[in-house]
Image 1 (cartoon, rainbow, N blue to C red):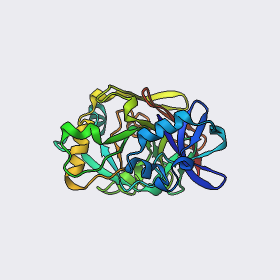
Image 2 (image 1 turned 180 degrees about the horizontal axis):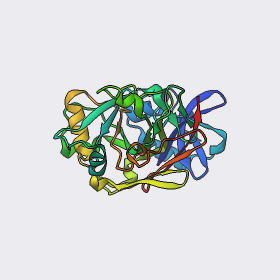
Image 3 (image 1 turned 90 degrees about the horizontal axis):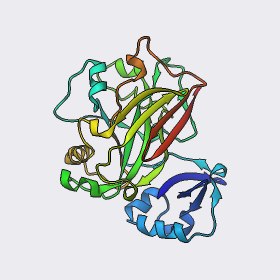
Image 4 (image 1 turned 180 degrees about the vertical axis):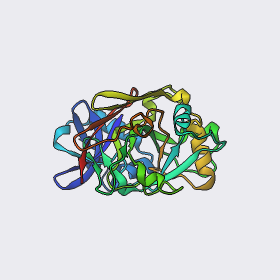
Length: 282
């Protein structure tokens, strides 16, 4: 099942995507699940799939305004330096534990929306990634049980202001500018993707391939990430883990490649779909 959050006629809702239409699931669940995070927390994904299969009414996807897949996550934990090629191009070394940083919800934007290039920077870079959404919360989750805590997967573009990221040893500012974190095009539920399935991730800028990798090249696997993060903070339904970007970022090319107004960047994961965002100057 593919799930999105969206706005229709000034009302926020969520639904199941079937082809070029969306089935309004908030109308089905009402107060039982006011948003997609609540649906996941209430363990209603299976019931939602049944409701979507029975539904007789739907909306054209083109009539709704997409929102980030989970507009209101409690936490967005991002994993840095998690592919060997990216570690090498940055001149860093592989660490025994995952390198982590946080994003705030306000930094996210939806599929089809424009990443915003602020006047404070001209070094806007792409980072194609795979995001996982937590379905069942927990603390100190064992690696062997980690898959059971996943609700599903989405594409992510951890777009970064490199000059702000590199200005200090802390990455927070460069990773959290308003409307830079693309999250979409939808959540593909875990039952659609086999645990430990090798997925192919590709990033394209204006149609040109810039990044390509497969998830078997992750330094710290998805179960390892869940186990490590949940050791220091409880994970909750709707929390997001962004699993790392491969080599080929614009900052490490010769000459560097920075995104500019009018560009179009796509993050494609073969088992998920294509997240597409334009770029505009603020």
